[in-house]
Image 1 (cartoon, each protein chain N blue to C red):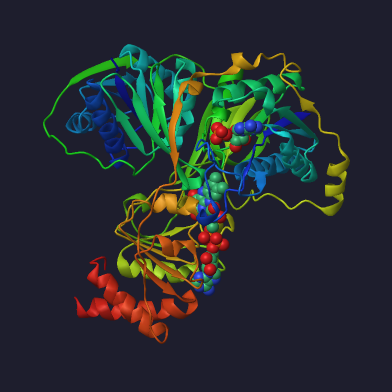
Image 2: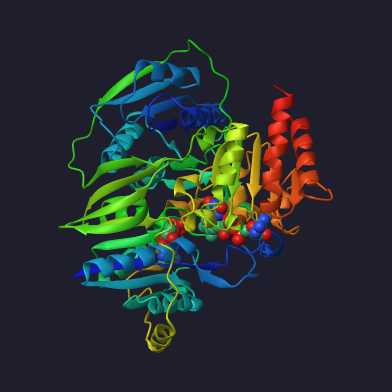
Length: 267
Length: 326
Ligand SMILES: Cc1cc2nc3c(=O)[nH]c(=O)nc-3n(C[C@H](O)[C@H](O)[C@H](O)COP(=O)(O)OP(=O)(O)OC[C@H]3O[C@@H](n4cnc5c(N)ncnc54)[C@H](O)[C@@H]3O)c2cc1C
Ligand SMILES: Nc1ncnc2c1ncn2[C@@H]1O[C@H](COP(=O)(O)O)[C@@H](O)[C@H]1O
């Protein structure tokens, strides 16, 4: 049986309009002006884990999240998409955790599970866009790491990973166990949970593991990124005026637009 | 005292990506009072080396016998180069491969790692001030790295290549490729057919479509415009996710960063994650039926209309304009 572990983080909805975005008075993070959602690529990651399970038949998917109590919502969503198990790790136990720490805590949790054949993460979170945790997990476990994967097949004891590049696609053959990050394409849009699966997910127990459950001393997990000091977090000002092309009909607007483009010397 | 190393992963001849990475390294090194070393992963020729020196490398390390990209081999080679020049600030390109190996190299060197940065300044005591857009481009985070090794990847198109000094030279060192048995292997590489125009990263004109286009077939209208203007077609994530165009056309936070003279956005709302990709565009022009769409906040020119009505007339008006001016 394959064991697939999907790491999901709960974040503020990244798709709110800029006008609704505010900084927290501490000016160290965003104010909670939006609802909380699963980071978008993490759901793409879960989707391709589900597709892989459908292809190989015999696989188990565990969703894990290091987060506040509200992060159970992300895990419930994962269960309703039909992950088999979900585990929350109490983020409160690890104040001020950095990307290295996050990877170490997730690694400690994954070590408590049945051995993972594949660990799937999003390519980057939609809030801080670190792009680090998955590669750090791979380094923690000393496993091969492949980024920007959009689809997987199992070929013998290897995975074939369809990976996005600047100009197209690659098939990367990877030994198992492996760690990957997932990017979006038209084949891995997260599925919509069925109503009965929502109900099943709601009844399921989601354990919340603590630092001591993982045998970790919070202070010892921090890595070099914790030494970076955020001196400023600010909303950049865009000061552009848009000239709206007017006209009685589309034809008049099109002519006017061409005139203005010619004046800008771009056509 | 800091030692700055720029790692290059050539995909053929010396390109703007390499020029950007070296330029970022060169100006940082100058601010820190240091010299810039360059490490080249993968095959490269003498003309590639000359370009590195022309853009400001003082020394250069090649790896003998390192064939096509393989993440573990390239990571190990990058670490060896870093050790050989005692680098404590290491720059990687924000390419697929660069982003794949930078974090692991940093991890093993005990370095802080920051990817997708747009600003990098050093001072004479060796402190770095790094600017990284966060929250999908809605905010900027300014980070200070005081001591210890740092691995940084600058966002593509966030650095303007510096002046070249043709004829500049420097020291060339060669190290052997690390011996290891890699656990991954690239079996095949498929190039996506992305139309007749120039590469998006280099295009002077980009006609880009979003969810508002409604379906795959409607992209022919954008292709027609692109042909007329000698440009290329791009897209928002929403259009790529629908499968209307290949993912290689996606522009934005997790797509291409582009810097055309003209960026024409059709049926794109202008989410911050999309705007991140067009920060370097000289003139943004938007066609959107919703006057409140955020794209109009960054556009120089806007037309509030349905594209179905406007685009055919635009093709006619442009054709006439071309005829008059030829
Ligand atoms: C971590 C992260 C990374 C992301 N990376 C990217 C990225 O790299 N690139 C990217 O683009 N997005 C990215 N996104 C997604 C982004 O937030 C938006 O969801 C996406 O850009 C929306 O695409 P859109 O503008 O095409 O669609 P919509 O927001 O749905 O906008 C469609 C627009 O079309 C207009 N329209 C509809 N019909 C017509 C018509 N007939 N004529 C004219 N106009 C019409 C509508 O008024 C609307 O403004 C990312 C999101 C996250 C969280
Ligand atoms: N707190 C977290 N809990 C679970 N997974 C996480 C967490 N933080 C990051 N990840 C995973 O690592 C990926 C990359 O995160 P980052 O390196 O922070 O951009 C995310 O898309 C998740 O899959």
